[in-house]
Image (cartoon, rainbow, N blue to C red; front, side):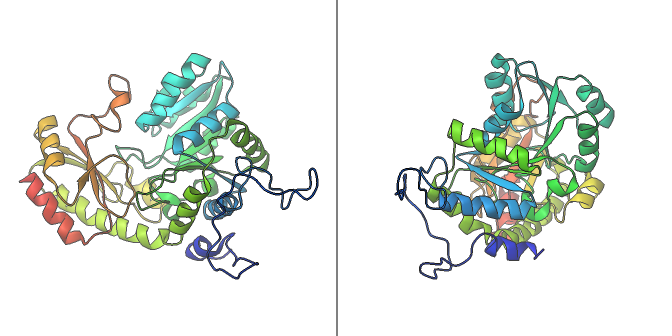
Length: 379
């Protein structure tokens, strides 16, 4: 198998046979001419069912995650919803990481719960608790974010896969924070990888999308059926934008990781900061696991303020290079207050986020400029 960056540029992306164009064409079409009734060219009939641009992206994603099939969706939550409604039935339960993304928690607790799908928040670092949670026959999915959003916990994917498969449960890993450049969960035993392609895969804060990549071809076929039947597919231009961005994923992640590491170390020494959550720090609770299963530690940093929630809000309001905004993974640096922003839907639940927490999406600007911005904001 060729190297990651080579696959990111070339997998499924041969020059166009008609023109020789080195960039895959953007197929902005809803329907396709048939050569007689049922005579489909390349299997294309309607762009919800299949589109050449989306197919190219799906091939590339499967290659980068080393899976058998990739599927592209209109958003990360559209991908999650399609997956969970494909593999779960009323009466099933989902073992949910105890600090999952607020949107995932909202989908499971408020949309799927009325249809008879229950959930159980568990600390995924407590393997005995995970074993107990999957013991009932109703446990269908272990849902794992690693690193998690926004507390940056890292779970042992191989250990969770062993527990899941011993009980006939699927292990789903949300790989959005790491990207396939830094971590490939399917190679560690996961069954499905989830991405919000809005984030690092898109990388430029100009496209919303989601993806699934699976290890098992039969599951991939079932998901493809539901992708078409439910219709939450990625549009061709969105697919083209993500495909464009995959080509620079490796070099961007190198810079994100380097900048975030510098900032995490700097924050650790700042007198206003109570704690820094970054897997690359040796004192991080899961540093050894992260070092074992990741090739780098990513661009996300969270930290807690000694001055509590008011201090956290002031820092968010005072930065200039760090833009106050939701989302993450773009080339520009962002700052947010998860308790009141991205994770507000988890307030009052076991997944509630500390109010003194600030989350940074560290971009690829010059790191000295980013440090100066944080310095004046924390002053």
